[in-house]
Length: 146
Image 1: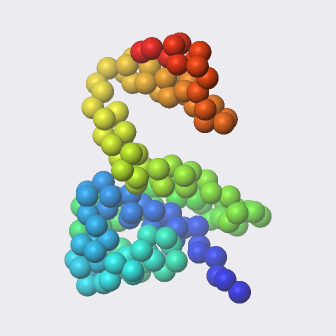
Image 2: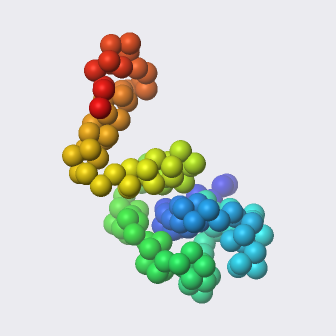
């Protein structure tokens, strides 16, 4: 019987991964700073292994964030205990995307846009480009000029 990782452990791990990637730190380097292997860091980031309080404190110092950062947006105990919760992936895809090279590049570039109207136009553009199939129609390309 395979044990399913706890959603809170998965959330904390995904926040560790997100912050590590944002800083451009490899799993090897984080592991070395913690005195661990990169495989152990992988297990933490996937939520397979729980991160103890003292270890989380260490990680927060290395990644230069308060320990509370890792719990921001975490599911509540009430949500975790709902039937079917473990099957759902609430906002997990967002954390997974943000930690990709493209996600990080997009977020950094978007954050540099100072004009709120232009930021909104970029959001509108991305929403218009995406559809349920992820395909563009030839006509939709012409309508999307920013």
